[in-house]
Image (tube, rainbow, N blue to C red; front, side):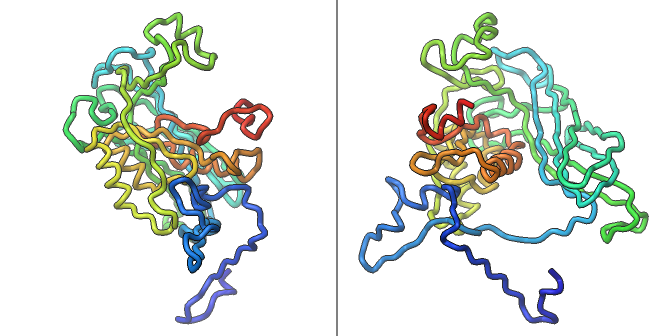
Length: 362
């Protein structure tokens, strides 16, 4: 776009105009069109009010990135407890440790060879053999191990060895990088090496949604592929300990999404802990929240029960490339947060095989 830019100090202005006839298929913050607690923009409260609060358009930063070698587009850590299913409290230094499979998503404008590496703050590193990254999208998975003696467990608020109010949870960094030798790149150092890298913060915990007597191995085996519950109830088990979930529903703090405050979201999490909450549910009629909210939940031990952004009344899911990309993007972006315990399909959507909600059964 360089040829389109103004020369010298004259500022450049980018104007984006949306044709209102473009179908949105309900892929905007549902409550911005009104809810039982939210104003309806097309039904002004007074004759002199003409509010328009639909979040249909760009409200976050927009920028261009030039990629001459490889871009790391997403990092998805998949963390699994190595031991048997725990029904007694796991103890720091005495459990069976965790496997960490780090899936690194890459994009390149052309085929290029190099190494993908992962370094952890608990002292373990791993690297791939030399791989050829094709043009376009691809991914590489690097596996690490976290020994019980090298890590501390992540616990929800009010659980674990440190019960002090607003105490920070144990979190660990992983640094993911792609490196290669490249001779024809503007990002090349004097020695001709290229390295791109990014960082994620993770926690180690075992979470289970329990729907029956999980202390009975026969019940666990026979129920592995079944739906529903044995006694019409459920509870959470974290690191082997049953959890009485206490919390609330979270709706967007602002109808005008561009006015959201990171500080307010951090304070919301802190206030939840101070109120003896340990769980917050993210409502499907709203939006994926600011990163500050998820980071604070990781730090202070709030479990998140997270709806996808689907709701009744025009915001049902559908099989489409746009919606698939929406889900893949957001789940990959948020996958490192130990606070997110459950991904849920929809707000108040009953699975009806004769309606769009049949997608959940498929």
